[in-house]
Length: 386
Image (tube, rainbow, N blue to C red):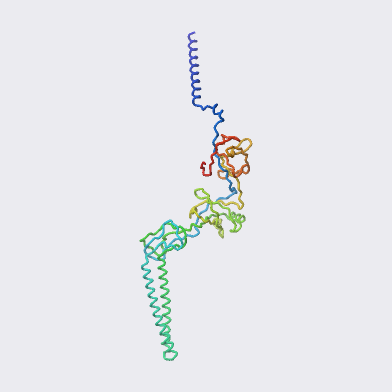
């Protein structure tokens, strides 16, 4: 009997402890859980969602090629006379115009040479005047049979030699002036100049050194290669070079180059080693986003663009009836059934069901239903919340 009483007391003790734990649990739940009954009576809080404007874009098939950016014109500046560099007259990395003086090589020696050649020309002209007078005099005497034929011939020869000496001295003077002009190295084209490879005080030798390099950046070319079969297809599609070509340049950082093609042409023969043909696209490059020597991707499309509506994949939802999105108009949710196409990059093509001015929910789909009021924040393509 004593054992039975002990067991009963243990059971009662456990029941009491369990009851206390349950009571304490209900107490904590009442303290920590929001008052659902009260919020339900007030209709609940209006859900907040993020919406984004649908995008209308060309989704026609495109083929991607790796292309290189190259200048239409480029120049390596080399000296044509020898001497020490006296001046460097440009800002490294800056833009120079055709005719700008960039380097000056010591000029004293070349100025002196010009003066010497000028003196030689003056002397030759003086000799010519004397020889001409003598020749005319001997010619007159010869007609009167006063001067011998030998004297006449000698006078004529001296006169002709004096004329030749004037021409030679004049040519030597021009050469000296040309060399003096070469002491000022000018930009032969307009473009962006790089680093000065030779600075003041350094001795340069004729045609052996490169002083600097200029590349044309506006306009500029993008070059890529296609197979001979692809070239045939492109010519069948676009015809001659006068027809516009659908091309999109993707810069190294992934952004799209917005400029239209200025002109384009293909090389005049197939490379026998690679069986490819080079194609060149020319752009104005007003903002200089295309940098010579850079590599870009170029997408070539068809002549007839296929425009479609694109939505982020986060906006897509599906149930037993098919695909749908949630559209927000005046802060009211509307369910739209949509017909989808292919996926372009990270976006879904919508063939039917949406208009270009619609805004779809991209975050918060699980919190809303058709016809519900919401608080909506617009997110643009740069993920900036408005």
